[in-house]
Every structure is written in structure tokens, then in C-alpha cells.
Length: 353
Image (cartoon, rainbow, N blue to C red; front, side):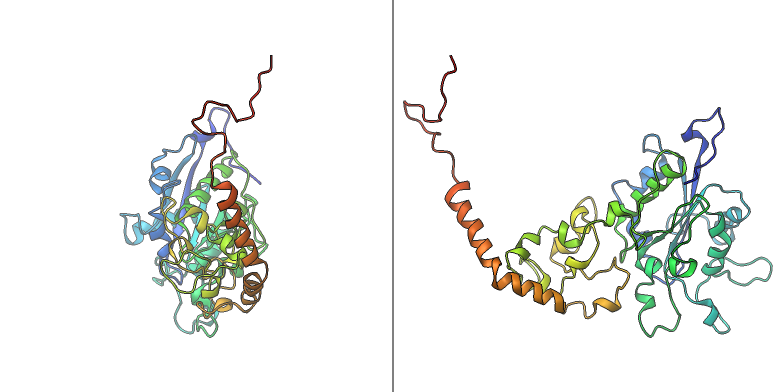
């Protein structure tokens, strides 16, 4: 991976001002930008104010945060196109409509082309800036894989960034498209990856390791089920029968956790609190490339999940549950016998002299 060039008289932190150009006007709800404002580890405030030790300066251009409006706000994108902002990370939020089938209009628009007064589509911005970006990040399932706007029978031809640029695309720094899926993406996942990329571009950290779907392995290496505090109930064949206060496994209520890569059960939503299964909700697979089409109806039990859960429920599950509870009650929930108030010592201690 290529890093930013640093002159002999500059430290790495002094040499780099990384700009984050965040386009929020794709086909989506802008929920990822709103979610990011609640990040805590690291927080957006820590990134913007430079509170993270050793981190290069970061300037975030995002409509949710900006006080500029109109062409004044969009000027940063023109500056990046002209090579005045280097390095910059291009962040795309929202899926890309297929502008080849837009008829006489356009699916998205961001800023106005001074030459003809017409809106500039997100696709055109991607064409202009992708060759010059140090990294491209797709945040939210709409930008990563198309998401809800790309459902079957949609009229826009919606797609994710990798569908548009190609799965093998790499930035001028040699970094593939980084996908941070979620509907919306988990707040800390977004800020953590931005920090990681800034350090990587400064030559102070390796590029993030990505899986086959473009997701950072450090964030999406586990399944929802592997991180869920309800997972032990699955192997015991003990399943919830209704939503709400039932603390048992939710697979029979439609949870797709065993086949979904997501760290929300482990990380929570805000400051390690909340998150779908943590508060009694099922995992609907919103971080997966096939969402939502492959996982609907959401609250129906998956056929293969039904098979595996029934096997656990009617075979080893009850035996495992009985054995664990029996051992806890018989052995592990009791103090050792030598703890008493009698005149003799029964702990097995013997003098060594």
C-alpha cells in the first residue's frame, strides 16, 4: 500500500491533513450520518478535534455536520477534483441509481455543474473522484450492496459502490473499497474505520484486512450468533416463544444470527449498550450482501435454521441443559467443605518442614 509522502523536516502527524468527503445524497435515508454522531469509541468529536494521540489532522465534510450551504459546501469536492485536497477519503452513503436508465431525469444529484447549471449525479462524482481518492468507503448497506433501494422490482437499478466500480477496484494507495454495512451502520464501526484509514494513509498502520464481501475482518469476522449472549441457549435447545422479556435464543422467531456477520451483539449500539438481540430484537441480516431479499419475511423462521434448532431441541439440547444445571447445583454452586468454624483444619494443608 502506498502512503503519503512526508518531507524530512516533518513528522508524520504534521505532514498529513486527511479530508473525508462524505456524500450523503445517494438512494438512502442518511441514517448512517445520523448514527455516526452517537459514536463513542472513538467519538466523532475526538476525530474532528484531534483528541486521539498521534493522529493526523482530519477534516470531515458531511452535510449533517456542515454549516456551509449550497455551492460553498460543495466546493470541497471541486477542490478534490482539482488535486487541492490530498489525501482524501471518499465516503459514499446510499446506493447508486443506474443513471443509464434514468430517462430524461436523474436518480441522484449533489451540487450544480457550473458549465450547464445541471445537477451533478453521485455517479458522476464517483467517476471524477475515484481515481484521485486515497481510499473509498461505502457506509450503510445501501452503499455497500444496494440495500433496500436495490430490492427486486425496483425501478432505479440501484446498486452498491463495488457493483458500480467493480469488485477488484483499488485506490491510488492500493486499498480496495472498504464496506461498512448496516441499516444503519453501527456508529463505532464507522469512526473506528475512518481512524484506521487515516493512520494507514499516513504510513502509521497497515491497511485494514477485508473479507470477500469487502468488510473489515476485525469488525465483521464473527457471526451475530458467535457474539450473542443468547447463543448458549441455542446449543441447549432452549428457544424464546415470544418477543419481549424472554431471554432465550430468538432463532425460532426469525433471528438470522447464525448466518450473519455482525458485531452489534458484542459491541452494542451506543457505548456498549443496546443493539438488536441485546434488547430482545431479532437479527434481520442487515449487514449481509443479500439483504433484504434473501432474508424475507424477516420474522419467519429460516428453513435450515428450523432443522438445526429442532435437532438441538430434541436431541442433545435437553441433556446438555440438564447436565449443566445438575453440575451447577450439585458441585459448583457450593463452597468447599474445608471452610468452617471448627477447631480442626480440613483444607489438606500440611507443613513442609
